[in-house]
Length: 68
Image (cartoon, rainbow, N blue to C red; front, side, top):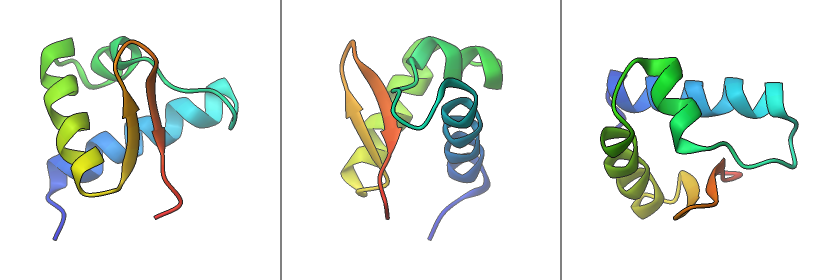
């Protein structure tokens, strides 16, 4: 089950990915800026979403959505 916060993070990553190009990873700083939260908050959420298989998170490289 996804929460509204989870959906907001996933939507932000999707929108930023579409803007950057499908082959690009999105920086956590850009996600934080788009959601008006801190980078550490985004990092924690991306780790949780990666654990659920929803994103591919790599420290210092950014995040990308998974096909799931």
